[in-house]
Amino acid sequence: MYINNNIIIIFAFLFFISNNAFSKETVNTKPNTKVTPEKKKEIKKDFGTLNWWETSDKILESTKKQPKTKDSERIVFDDDLLGIESEVTFFLKKDKFVKVSYNVTKKYSSNEEIMTDISKIRKKFMKEYGKAILDSNPEIDAMTPDNYNSFLKVVLDENQVISATWKKDRTEVKLTLKKNFMFFNSLEIVFSPV
Image (cartoon, rainbow, N blue to C red):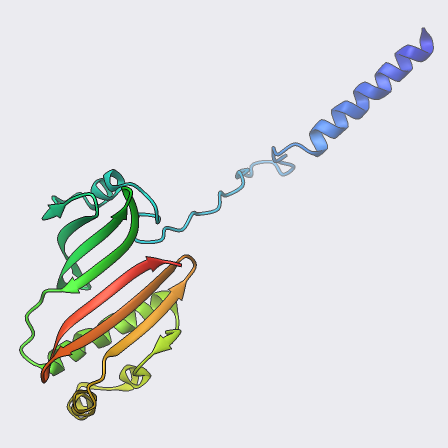
């Protein structure tokens, strides 16, 4: 019986050591210091406080606004993007969030005014998403309002569309400025999953 008791004591000792050695608890060996638990990894959101594929109820809860329009395919709100009057549309597929589109509703009095807003939006996106992966006019970032007229004349004469695309994690952002005759009038920013 003596051997069995020794074996039991050895196994108990090994069990005690293994449980303490592999425990997630942090042992504080310094007196008067605080032990902090491991930090949980922050979960990044795809768009504001939302992730792609969340439900329409979650969209309504996160926006805390009354929608202008709501149906099975979209939810539309009046909003702003960096202080620019916009209409934001959350597109749904089977009640799941699949895309967001900001259509600027601000009435511009000149092409220079819209270029000022484009520059502001581009700077914000570059700060958040880095350099654009596709960019029809990267020179915009170095321009000052004094350069807008000559730049716009070339763009309008050549019937170009101004656009840029950024990509980060699970989100792609596309900024597009389209024209109608000799005036730019459609500024859209689309966020979508990649």
